[in-house]
Length: 285
Image 1: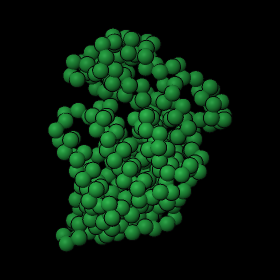
Image 2: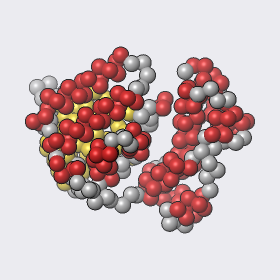
Image 3: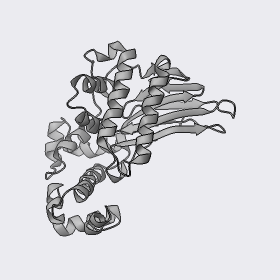
């Protein structure tokens, strides 16, 4: 059995990766894999099965699957020209989504239940709401085609409509969730989300999540397949790109704001990671 960690890269400051009506009718090779973010899959058509948490669920029209970060899962569909596998998949970073939903208390609690709940159920039958879900997803896709840049208001609307539809069919989701224990890597990423703009002290991080200093980097690599320093750098550069495109702050000040007080180092690192200098990046946005 092949287990594969597939990091989902949110390029260009994206909040949501949205793949609408992926159509497969010749060959679909399923395999075990997991991501560092949440994956949501809605089935428009097809047959097959999903294996997650040592349980098997049927793939059929109207089924929705919500995979939590690092949740190992296997998707298989027996496709043909007469029976294609059609699905919409979107990937979201849960911490970012919770911030978008911060003014919608009930829907935020529902989302927290989905991505952090300890319940093993990850599949929901929305066949009776199929037309509503189709309209929600089609509306967002149509909006995407008309917008040249990602619109967080449209994304928030998509999430609210999706969560409302899900909550209507699953009243138990609105109850206070029994939260699962976060993996160490998730705790590390959550800590970085709050402190990436500061001088990150590995000892302080280790103390905060109750690990030894020598174990922090090792456990992050074990759980994600990537280096902690690379994740921290990526998070800082992502924020730098956002500020370069949306603010009038100087490049030097942006470097300071995202945790790089040395302007020369910031410029060199940015060019190595992004492929161009901060000044050229700003002109291109």
